Length: 62
Image (cartoon, rainbow, N blue to C red; front, side):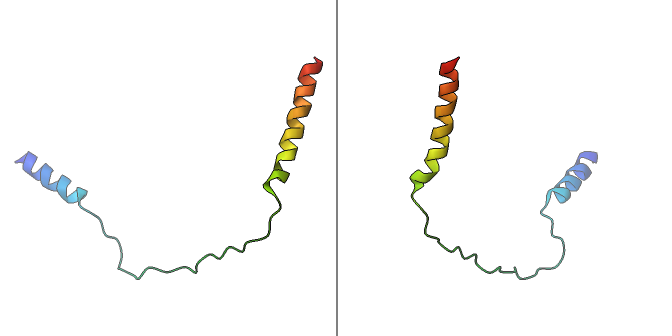
């Protein structure tokens, strides 16, 4: 009998919960991304290449 009561309690606890009233979902305004004219992607490569060259020069100097 205890197992039956325990099974009923666990099945009631495991059922899906519902809290509060149903409300319509709030639709947010769409995000608009403005495209800007960017420079060449090669411009962002120069800084890491220069840093790599400096590190290589320091290592070679030792």
